[in-house]
Length: 76
Image (cartoon, rainbow, N blue to C red; front, side):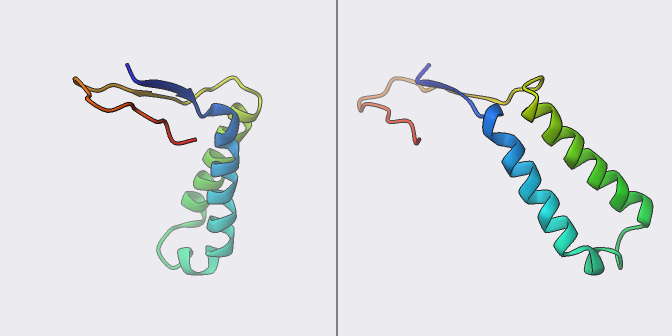
């Protein structure tokens, strides 16, 4: 194992950015999705953001590698 990170504390920001993008593009999306589908997407994004913000959900990234000759530098 090379690295192990918890992205959970920051992931609500990602979900909120997706929600903002959804709202910004809602007029175009309404041409392709029903009101119910857009409401479902909105509900999903906001509920997920809430669980990450409350820290009841986590997102882990684990990096494994085979034999490495070089040192692994985790992007932070």
